[in-house]
Length: 115
Image (cartoon, rainbow, N blue to C red; front, side, top):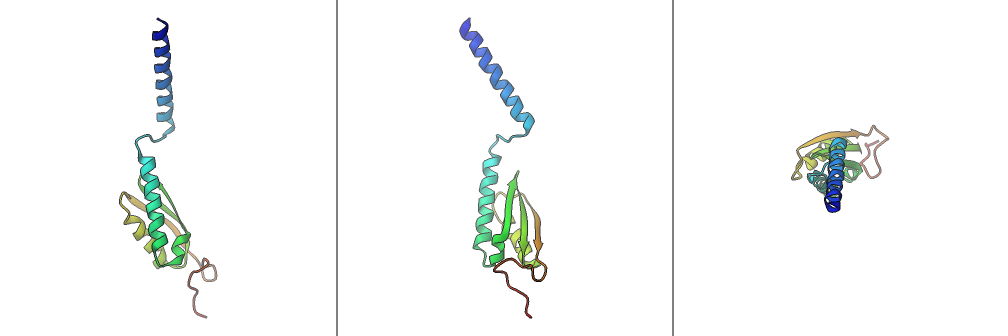
């Protein structure tokens, strides 16, 4: 009888914890690991690109959606970051919040405008 009560208590505890996890929205289906792998792959693509300003792009992935932020030198670099992110296997969509620097505000290493 005592073992049955212990088993029932353990089952109840597990059920309560599982319910709490489901209510908090914590993902348990592996998407968190997938998102981390996608983020790493996007960062690698950006780092390998010849535009040094793309290393200033920040990447965060949630549910296979890659969110880009940061500041780059021009619109071409901004769009190139989105193209590189979308080329990563597993990316469902890219949200490009990257901004372009105004003249005089370009990130270190970015080409400056001619004087």
